[in-house]
Amino acid sequence: MENQYKIRSPFFYAIMRLMSNRAALVSGVLLSLIMLMAIFAPLITKTSYEEQKFLMTSLAFPSQTHWFGVDDLGRDLFSRIVYGARVSLTIGFAAAICSVFIGLPLGALSGFYGGKVDWVIMRIIEVFSVVPPLIAALLLAALVDGGFFSIIFIAGIFGWVQVCLLVRAQVMAFKEKEFIRSSLALGASPMYVIFVHLIPNSISPIIVGFVQAIPLAMMLEAGLSFLGVGIQPPLPSWGQMINIGISFMFFYWHMALFPTLALAITVLVTTLFGDGLRDALDPTLKGKG
Amino acid sequence: MSRYIINRILSIVFTFFFISILVFILMHAIPGGPFDPVDMPLSDSAKAKILKQYGLDQPLYVQYFKYMWGVLQLDFGIPYQSPGETVLELIGRAWIPSLILGGSGVLIGAPIGIALGLIAAIKRNSFIDYFTSAISTLGLTVPVFVISMLLILVFSVWLEWLPASGWGEPKKWILPITAYAAIPMATYARYTRSAILDTLNKPFVTVLRAKGLSERKILFRHVIKNSAIPLVTVFLPMFIGTATGSIFVEAMFRVPGLGAYFVSSIENKDYPLEMSLLLMITVMFCFAYFIADLIYALLNPRIRLGNKKKQ
Image: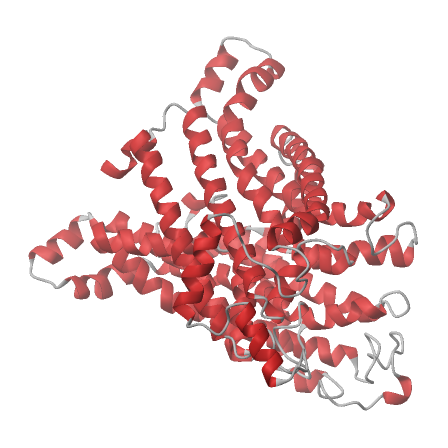
């Protein structure tokens, strides 16, 4: 009888809410599968992404030996798609980490201090909100000459705004609570309060911001690579493969279809999982943003 | 209110100059110049003459102030890619296909989206509701070039019903406009659904029901009117947003619009065109948000913009 009213942590309820959201659950499972594929890419593919082993059967259609066919340069398309998942997910996660690193301190500062600090940070965000990320990214990509790390950096520069706003709202809401005020009254420094009390209490908006930054970064990478300024060959990127696929689509549809589907499915499941996580961690945010 | 408007306009002016400086620095920081030997094999003296003609031999800050002085007089310079016309003429010419694309995309997509969202909100958890959420999630998350590619694969490659690329005859417009319409449709479907559901949960609807009004009357006389406000305000920014969406749609369908110039002006270091395009987009976005906020305040008397600062 004593276990009848077991005390559960908020985390437990968040997990329960996530499990009861069918779309989020399915997306989460699919996302984990894609991540496993990306991590164990060398184990499940026949060749590496750049080996031109099948030049004799270039542009072969999908078959039992080549599930997604062979590309124009004699590379197994399935291997390239799987390695593409590696590129896309790495960029997504790394850029999301970047976004949190920029957005978290700025959001905490602007929420805690308000006033002038807030004004300056809000003006910066305003600039970011009127410049279309894609065009600015095009400029930056031309500046740093594409490449893996610059894409992460560029996506991070444009991903932090959401994290910053989420953290700012949370900090503003907590700033006036009793435990913060008593902590300040007891002589805690603002930095101590921010790091020890406010940031740990913002963990759910941080997680939400982090997960929502991932698909945005992946889309930015795919878009830049599609336009030819992102990931440079031979490193495979789905955006780049779609662009190549356009030239072949009328005769060799597999070149266009598989990278398109891979990108669509990955971005879709990541977004749905992020939305589910948001609803689970903070039910009051449901449907917003 | 008038103070609010003045503040906003000042902030737009500030943003405008801030971005112009930022873009100018970035643009010139990209290695290489517009008349490098790779693109144009010129003798040194000829190159010096061209640089002088375009004022590129002067210090950067002089170039910046000269250019911005021109911009204030609506002189956006001459594009290096096609020196026969001014930047304004080039943009005016290239914008027509983009406007047709974006305009019809929004005008077709938005009503369909509103209708879908409306039905989805009324018939919650029905097939239409799930269908609408699926469509709007797809449209909002999947990049527009992926949608374009799927459309091309289905309708031009497999069914061979429609041409996949080009411009000119209206038959070629169908696929790009459809691809384009996906974003406004998805946006509006989602916004409408949540706005209507929001209003349906308000106490005044319960009162109307208690008074015995039919569901139809409640919906058409009261709920839709009250849900329209957020829908009106997303319209302008979304319409401007099609300008960047056009880069991908136009690249996929080989439409000779403005989109290609965003990429080519950066690649060719066509400074005047690059600057003008970016400044134009920025200003349009600024004003779109500004006007959207004003319309919001006009339609919803509960919001008083001027007092926002005093909170």
